[in-house]
Image (cartoon, rainbow, N blue to C red):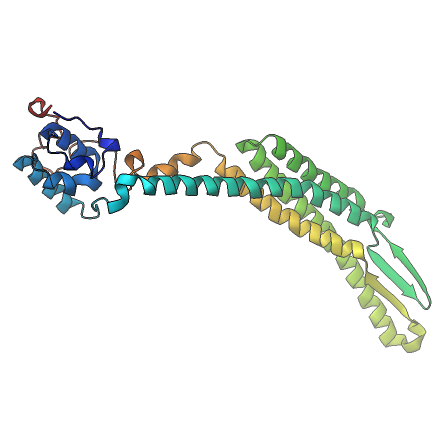
Length: 286
């Protein structure tokens, strides 16, 4: 008598003529991909063969095991591929978490750079976001950037589902906040340019060579806001992958890691048909 673990069984094992009918029944029940090999085994009883034929008719999507199955090459390749994907995911997540504080610092630096430049004749003057006395652009940019920086640092050191997900949301909020500050400042600059253009049209040369243009701080703040939005979205995706139960989908690869194999949940027969004695593990075949 030869007993074989169904989960580790390969087509090569089924070439052994000493396998008992009970073992063949267990392999057929737990390993749909090997049923064709069990069906051809000389010790396969007629009723087990009939049951296998019935299952093949009901579930035609099951196929026989590939020729290279005996070397376990598909399982090894899948494991290596999964590990590579996991490492790649971890690498880009780390890059994003490091980039967020850097981008937040970049936004703060942008607030000190010239946001608007005015030129009148041969004279020119620049102003940054901190020079707006009646506006709070400076404080808003500072708060939004510090929010993103703190979120990125916390998520970098505490890589757990709620922290990473919350950090991603906070980073997106920081990006939107900086974007709103940029839109308001840009709107004021556009209004000033329109006013100057209308004055030149109305008064001609009396309008002088007065010009208003955006400074490097405006462009840098816009870039930082967009990058914070992108990194925040990436953090949210990374956080969702860390949520409890996210790995349940891996079970779709099959029972015991074998594609197409399912955990037995009961007799696989049509209504009104008596279950096979092999599903009941008849002691006659033990």
